[in-house]
Length: 148
Image (cartoon, rainbow, N blue to C red; front, side, top):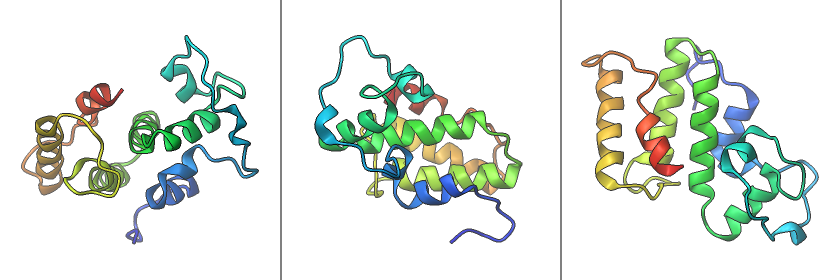
């Protein structure tokens, strides 16, 4: 449940419940586009540069088929967090939710990156939330690059 003082856009509310909503279109796209084309760059897919069948929606379905939707969801949400303007409370809330969904051991969408890196990042986040370390908006950068 979201605290009252936290302002979440609908995309965040849906994504924190089910990351696959980040790439699923309202009209379900055909799974016939599952063949991927060489030379597609993930950065461009995430930026929305490509049209079907190489767009985020199709790539998301492909990641689901390959059981990699956790990494894609993490990349999209971290990218979104980094590009949005959030006050400290909103940033901390979103950071906490990303950590609990993707980084913590046994989490729902636990990403497959080096365990020590995930745990170091979780500790850094916890220290920031506890006030024992300053808030760094770059705290997810290393794990993001590792997941990318």
